[in-house]
Length: 447
Ligand SMILES: *[C@@H]1O[C@H](CO)[C@@H](O)[C@H](O)[C@H]1NC(C)=O
Ligand SMILES: *[C@@H]1O[C@H](CO)[C@@H](O)[C@H](O)[C@H]1NC(C)=O
Ligand SMILES: *[C@@H]1O[C@H](CO)[C@@H](O)[C@H](O)[C@H]1NC(C)=O
Ligand SMILES: *[C@@H]1O[C@H](CO)[C@@H](O)[C@H](O)[C@H]1NC(C)=O
Ligand SMILES: *[C@@H]1O[C@H](CO)[C@@H](O)[C@H](O)[C@H]1NC(C)=O
Image (cartoon, rainbow, N blue to C red; front, side, top):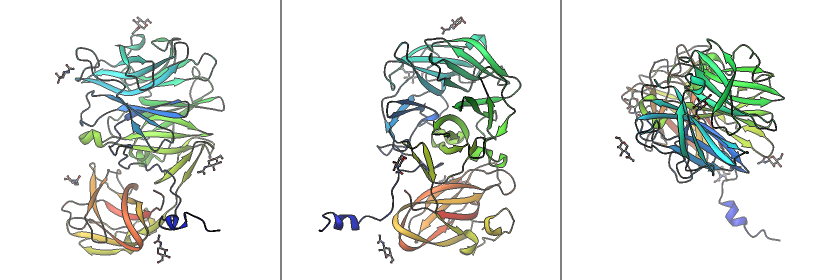
């Protein structure tokens, strides 16, 4: 018997097209607009995930909106109405700060309650704000901003426990960001009632908690403004007992893969780390770094994944594999050099790219838009970038955040249209600034 759709099928590349998460990519919504939901909070209602965050499209730190996006797969997001918008003459005016919105559902009142960092433009007020709604995207009705229990609160999170009462807690950087505190919320989730823990002189912020096997795993960054730092994990058997000493969630040198924790979402026996790669000079172009957080080693560690996917039914994640091409094996032109150092993959990289130096690497494509990850080192204190051109076509520019001193290597993704068979990808041709040193590239087929 002839299979009726065979001719149609044959035209489609024979590749599994699982929806993938690509940390650091320009992530767009189902309308094609860049997702503006920084300082994320994730809420699940039935099969739907709601992503609330800061809309920074205006490239300003000041409040413009708390956005609301929906998805059933954590990859494809649709923008809904704004959940919270400015009210002039209040603490949520267009000249105030509203950051890190976290929405939780209060069963007692059948009400969605949004908590956020509420501040003046110089971060001097250090308050929490609360707004409520009857639906996950709202719009939310603003209630108040205040100093919880009379103390400062800056970068914060909310954790709801799985006890019968669904007790909720505010996790917050207090006392000039010196002391990290946990306080219990009232039954309505409208206020805090009791401080139950403090990690003194810890300088922690942007927290999240994942409960696993009855243990409370706390994740937090240190305080270095918009700059990344090595984020830490802590564990305790109850939220009021002493937490373990701080430990890294990733190798220190990579500074949490240039990101800061915003939210941690359980996934089976592991979790998804949801961080922000802040870009203060262009806040709306801050990217999202979402990575698997694995307990495979017995303690939580980020798994670097250029391209990966989740299976929500199984509660598992899968990291895509690609084909590696060493930059030093490409055709090196002009003033570009081939530095040698054991920290480079293959012991070598291509340096002095840009300003007359370029490299062309021949790769195999499958005739599709494919993710390509550029592994590089940028020892400056500022960002660099590189032009990328496929088969002599128009260039795109890929940003290369600073990676710290020495040869700390990070990767940044770019989606390229590759033809089936051999392709030449040229880096840094015709650019008048220096690009980062290029170690290798990895070409993926998942898209
Ligand atoms: C890609 O090229 C290979 C080898 O030339 C060929 O066998 C294959 O059918 C091509 N695939 C597509 C999707 O065109
Ligand atoms: C709020 O204030 C800003 C700045 O003064 C102004 O641009 C904006 O129009 C005001 N919005 C409303 C709704 O009044
Ligand atoms: C929160 O509770 C405190 C008492 O602990 C009270 O003084 C304060 O007004 C309350 N804040 C709000 C916004 O309800
Ligand atoms: C996801 O996991 C479920 C349950 O284990 C399995 O049936 C399903 O095939 C998986 N989906 C994919 C795309 O692998
Ligand atoms: C690339 O980086 C240079 C600084 O090294 C900067 O001047 C330029 O604006 C950047 N280009 C793009 C398109 O971002």
